[in-house]
Length: 115
Length: 114
Image (cartoon, rainbow over all chains, first blue to last red; front, side, top):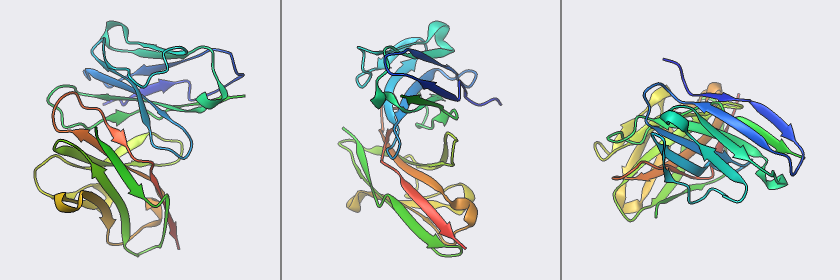
């Protein structure tokens, strides 16, 4: 079974530029998550989708971050304009949705460096 | 709201020694608790999970954890450390019901010396 795929693995941009990250979850997984992991910290949930609807985006900085999950499969996370403090690893995860016991399957992450 | 606290950002052990990584949780409802491991430049991988069944949970790679409600703890242990156990370990909590949303601790880096 293929795992969660993310791209790009690494991205370096200058502040005020824009960047987009892509995630393809495990086939059939209804729930998709984007987490931000800053160096030395635990992952922090940015946004959670159930199919193509947003369940929780309370910690998403909506003035600069946006995410979508068209057709309930792939998802894109965009940052525009980027700030220095956005340097982090962006982790995508998926789970089977309702009835599951909370196990999330993570991709390898997209490391963003903002200069 | 749910949260977890991991005591010690770094833990160093010798190969063959006992591994003990501490996690305390706070939850207003019965929690599900998890331990995830992260190897360098990789995503997180589930080690084990507590979902209100047996309080002693066994996971992969010889790790286990015990849910202690009276102490609000879910410490991770392994009797004998191996060099390959060197990684970052995260404790996480989610509410028993509703949409699953993991809240992670700040992580503990395990260092294993020969």
